[in-house]
Amino acid sequence: MGTQHKSAALPLALAYAALIVYASLYPFADWRDQGIAPWAYLAAPWPKYWTGFDFGVNVAGYMPFGFLAAIAVLRTRPGVGVAGAVLRATAAGAAIAFAMETLQSYLPSRIPSNVDLGLNSAGALAGAVLAAALERFGAVAHWHRTRSNWFVEESRGALVLLALWPLALLFPAAVTFGLGQVYERLEAAISEWLLDTPFIDWMPVRQFELEPLVPGVELLCVMLGALVPCLLAFLVTRSISRRAVLLPLVLVAGMAATALSAALSYGPEHAWAWLSLPVQVGIVAALVLGVLLLPAPRRFCAGLLLIALVVHLSLLNQAPESAYFAQTLATWEQGRFIRFHGLAQWLGWLWPFATLAYVLAALSRRTRPA
Image (cartoon, rainbow, N blue to C red):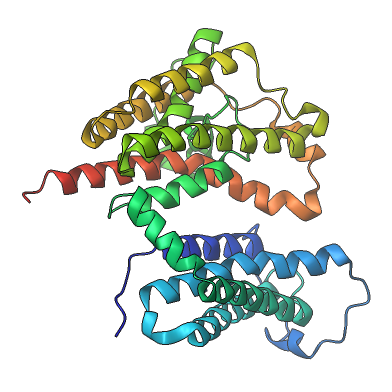
């Protein structure tokens, strides 16, 4: 029997499944029984109107899930075999697609489609076949050996967070790399929930008005926002030389994601408009600090990461949300990208807190007796 391995593919597959649920059922409002069987769409005729973009998105949208699910099966259930991994991953993708299309029958704003179901299932199959091909060529085993050489044994959570960081940056933020800016939105949501209830009087009233960050504080936020994922990578990397390779790669990935966000939101000509002088200095400062911290012990990196996260979140939540948010929604292609846009916003809100929880758990494990 093959040996089971802990794989980052499993939590990534689960996270991607959550992405599918979010994109398929957004905005999660106006649920109602529309007087038809929820599976009636299975017998519907071929749609009159369709585009190549719609077909491509429905296939491509499920390919990552099929790929990750197949990799997860291959790494955690090696005895199943390649064919079994493809079958399980495809079945899981088809089951999710069926559930999403069926639930859309209760959402007036969504139209369930048997064509979408077939394309989604085909996408999951294509992703699983790609994973199987990589397994045949030894790429999966090579990645596992590379991961074992580069990263410590308990690195799965950190690798998942690092993979999600560029995606979280796709939603425009008030400050570059400023993830976790939730105070203003949370305050408004709680006020709305408690409105017209006696509990609204219990809600504390903010005594200060949120003000945009001055350039010096913005520089500090940029530096901390860029340094946090670098420290997270240091926390699970085995050697100084490998840290030296990952440091610029993490920063470049963050800059590329931010440029892509600006290009998609405001147009390609504004892709680098966010790269102001405070941002440039903040990135360079993060790079310099990262170089100085290359030989730092992992436990020291974890403690510094906690401090950087807390300070970053504290400073960031003293500033208002981006004034360009309404403009972004107006210029974004609503029909094609708005659900992904909202998901990226949720990632941007939650990523720092998930990282905080991960580091605290890692420190707790390290304090246990050997």
